[in-house]
Amino acid sequence: MSALKLQKDLTAGPITRTILGFAFPMILGNLLQQLYNIADTLIVGQFLGADALAAVGSSYTLMTFLTSILLGLCMGSGAVFSIRSGEKDEEGLQAGILHSFLMVGALALALNAAVFFLIDPILYFLRVPDDIYGMMREYLWIIFFGIFATFLYNFFASLLRAVGDSVTPLLFLGVCAALNILLDLLFVIKFHWGVGGAAAATVAAQFVSGAGLLCYTWVRHPKYRILPGKMQLKRDIFCEIARFSLLTCLQQSVMNLGILMVQGLVNSFGTVVMAAFAAAVKIDSFAYMPVQDFGNAFSTFAAQNFGAKKTERIRAGIKSAVVCSVLFCLAVSLVVWVFAEQLMLLFVKREEVQILEIGVQYLRIEGAFYWGIGCLFLLYGFYRAVERPGMSVVLTVVSLGTRVALAYVLSALPALGASGIWWSVPIGWVLADVTGLVYYKVHRRSLLNDCLADDGNSSAQDFAPAAKSVK
Image 1: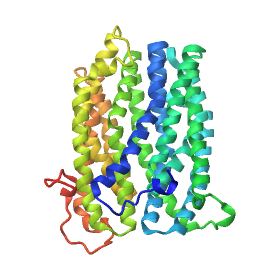
Image 2: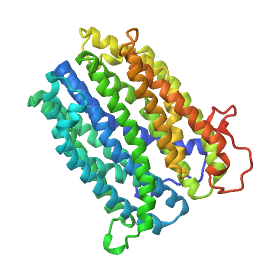
Image 3: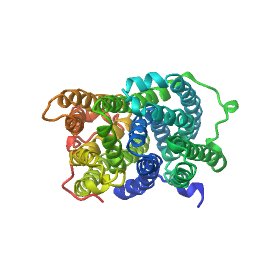
Image 4: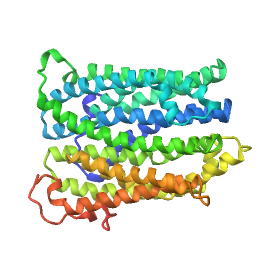
C-alpha cells in the first residue's frame, strides 16, 4: 500500500465513519504500546514475585510521567501540523516540522540527561520502600536509555497522524510489541536477568519503533524530510510551535505529575497496596486507553476542519464523537466490573488474597466512571484543535488537583483508607467535565474563531449524547 493511500482527508466524507476509521489504528496502536509495560508486569509478576511486581509497577507510573512530557510536546506540534494540513499549506507544514523537531528533540535530550542525574532524588520523592529500592533503581537506570527513542516514535507518529496516516505508526508498534514480548521471555525467563532484563527488552523495542518510523518517513515522504540547510529558522514559527507544544506538554505533565504524587501516597500504604495498584492501574489504563486515542483522533479531525474553516462539520463531529465515546465507555465499564477478579489474576497469583481484594476494589470504583474520562479526553482534544490548548491545562489542573487533594484527605479517614485514593479519581473527572462544558457554553461563539458565520445554534449540548442518530 502506498504512503499516499494511507493518508486520509478528514475534512470530507461521512463524519462518524471518518473519525472511527481514523481512530481505529490509533486505538489498536496504543493498545499494542501498552503491551510494552503489561508484558513486563505480567512476566515479572508471575516469575519474579510480588516485590519485583511492585518495583516495576511503580516504575511504570514514573515512566508514564516522563513519556507524557515528550508526548505532550509532540501532540502539541501535531495540532499545528493538522491545522496546516487542513489549510493545504505545505510550506507552513514543512517549516513547522523542522522547528518542532529541533525544539522537542533538544528538550528530549535535556530530559534524558536530567533523569540519570536525578534518579536517587526521584526515588526518595516517591517514598520507595527499602525492600524494593534496589530493584526499582536497576529497572529505571536501564529504562531511561529508551527516552530519546520514545521521542522519535511519538514525533513521527504525531506527524503522520496529523496528515491523516494513522496506520503506519500502528504497523511499527505491532512489530515492536511482539519483539518486546519475545525479548521479555528470553531475558527474564531463559537468561534470568531479573527486572533489568525486562527493562532491556522494552528499551530495545522502543529503539526499533523510533528509528524505524524515522527511516520510513524519510524514505516514503520526501516532502517531510528535515533538511535545515534548505529552511530558514523563524522566531514566529518557533513561538507558535512552542505555544501549542509547551501548553500541551504542561497539560500532559500536570496530569501525570498528579498521578505520580498519588503513587507516592500509595507507596506509603506498603508493598501489598503497591502491588495491587501496580496491577490494577495497568488494567485501568488498558480499559480507557481506546477513548483516550479516540479523543486524540477527534482532535486531529477537528484541527484539520478548523484549518479548512468547516465549522459546521466540527459541530457535527462533536455530537458524533460524544455518542461513540459514551457508548464504548459504558460497555467497558460493564466488562471491568464483572470480570475484575479474573483480570487481576492475569497479574497476581490466587494465593495473594490481599493484593487481589484491593485490586478488585480499585477496578470496580474506577470502572464505574469511565464515561467521565471519555468525555474529558474529547474536551482536551477539542480545545487543542481550536487553538485553546491553555484550556486543556485548566481542565487537567481541575481534574488532577481535585484528585490529589481528595486522595490525601479521604485516605486519611479510617473508614476509607486506601479506597479513598480510588474514589478521588472519578470525582476529579466529573468536576473537570463540568468545567469544560460550562466554558464551551459561555464561549461557544468565539471558540471556532468565526470560521463561518455562527448560526447561533451551537450549545453545550453538542457535548451531551445526541438524541438524533449520527451518520
